[in-house]
Image (cartoon, rainbow, N blue to C red; front, side, top):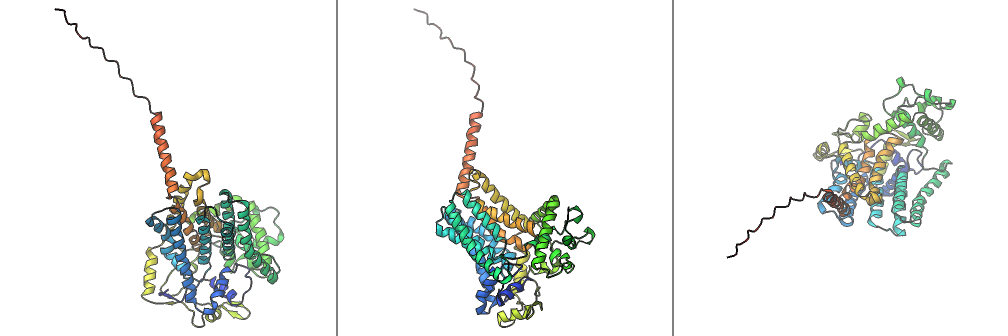
Amino acid sequence: MLGYQPVMFFNDSFDYLHVATEPYPHPLRPNGYAFLLLLLKPFHSFALVAAVQHLMGLAMGVMIYALLRRRFGLPGWGAALAAAPVLLDAYQLQLEHLVLSDTMFTFLVVSAVTLLLWHDRPSWKIAAAVGLIIGLSWLTRSVGMPVLLGVLLYMLVRRSGWKLMGVTLAACMLPVLAYMGWYKAESGKFAITESNGIFLYARVYKFADCHKMKDLPVREYPLCTLPANRLPNSQDGIWNAQSPLNRSPGMRFGPENNALSNDYAKRAIISQPGDYLRVVAHDFFRVFRWERTVFPDPATYSQYEFRRTPTRTLPDWQMDANSIASAEARAYERGDAETRVVEPFGAVARGYQDVFYLRGTMVGGILLIGLAGLVPLWRRFGGQAALPWTLATGLLLAPAATAEFDYRYVLPAVPLAALAAGMAFSPEVRRTVAGWKRDRRRAAVSDAPAPPVPAEQAETKVPEVAAK
C-alpha cells in the first residue's frame, strides 16, 4: 500500500467503477464487487478499497490456520505453512491491490468452506449462512454457480440431510433471484448476465471449423474464421477489433450476439469434441508450468505485476454517452486517482515479487498432496478434505472449459488447495495410514513360511554301570 498509492487498476476495473457510479445490471459481469465499491463510495478513498481487500486476504490466512489448528489438529507450524501461500504470495498481494473482484470472490468462498468444515453437523442457521455467502460469491463472479453445486454434492455425500441442503439452496438463491429480478426489470430478461455465449465463443474460437459443422445456419456464418486468419489467443475472439463478433449487426456484447455466439459455440463443441477437450486440457495443464510466461499479451500481463511506472493509467474510455472512465475514477476518489509509484517502497515490492511467488508446478504439488490425503479416506469419499480439494480443482478447470487460461484465475484456487493439502496431515488421515502399515506388517508375518524343524538329535546312551 505504501509503494503503489492509492491502488492499482486493471482493464475491468472501470466497468466496476461505472456500475458503482450509476448502478445498473452489467451484461458482461455480475455486480457483486461493484456493490462493494458502492458501499465504500461515501469514503471516497481507493486506499480504503485496497485496505479492505488486503484485510480479506489476511482473513483467509487466519481461517485456514484456525481450521487446521483447531478443527483438524495440525501443529502450529503445519497450519502456518498451509496459510502461507495466501498470505505471502506476491501475485496474491498484488491482486489484492487491484480494483478487481477476485479477492472478494475468494474471500467469500473460503468463508463458506470454513463455516461448513468447522461444524461436522451444521445447524440450519449455519447451512443458511453458507448458502447466502455462496449466493454473494455467485453475484461476484459467475463461477460461483459451480461452487454451489460442489457444496451441495459435499453435503449429500456427508449425509447432511435434504432439509439442510434445501436451506442452503434457498438461502443461496435468495440474493441471486433478487438480482435476476432487477436484471429483468432493467433489460427484460431474467438472467444474471448475458455474456455466457460470448465467452464460450472465445473458448471455441481457436479450433472451430465451420466445414466440420453439419447444417450450420446462415445467420452463424459471420462467426466462422479460416484457420489462416485466426488470431493467436482465444480472448482475441472477443476483445480484438478484428473479432468476428464485430461482423454481426448490433452491439458486440448485446443479447443477440450472446445468443448467436452460444448456439455457434455449442455446435462447434458437439461437432469437434476432441478438439474441445484438447484446448481445455492444454489450458488446464498450463496452470502447472514452472515458468511464468507473458500471456495473453504484454499489455495485459504487465497489469498483473508491480512495475517501475504504472502499467494501467486512467483511460479516456467512453463508458456511456455522458461518462468517461478517468472522470469516474477521479469522482470516486474526489481527487487524483492515478497510481503513483513511491520509492523505495515500490522497489521493495518489485524485488519481493521477483522471488516470492507460487510457481505453477508448486500449485500442482499442493493439489497432489491434497489428493493423496483423500486416498486413505476413500470409503468416505475422501472425508471433509474432499470439499476444498474439489472446489480448488473446479476453479482451475472452469476457465479452461468456458473461456481461456488466465493467471488471475489460478489464485482463487490456491487457498482451497492449500487447505486440502494441510488436511492431508490430520490425525485422522495419519491414523488410517498407520493402520494400513500395521495391517501390512501383520499380513507379511502371517504369510511368512514356518521355520524348518531341526533334525532330531540322536539320543546319547548312558553306559550301564557294572554291578560290583
